[in-house]
Amino acid sequence: MARARSAATDTDGLDWSHAPVRDPQPCVLCGRPALLRHPKTLRPCHKTCSDAKAAADLDRAAAAYNGAAS
Ligand SMILES: [Zn+2]
Image (cartoon, rainbow, N blue to C red; front, top):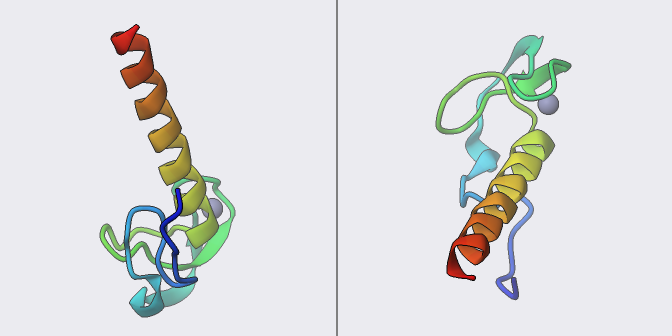
């Protein structure tokens, strides 16, 4: 967790600085209008939602790993 992260790069290492901006469409994660398109999937998505999902996925993976190890 000590790795520095730029504001334009989320926890998946995606570069949101070049994410397309289009008319508002419902975010795939929260359903609220989003101007940004996900850099990889190009589906409507907030960067903050993507960050939260990536962090949750990491937590789940860590919990599964720790659960399997004990
Ligand atoms: Zn969202």
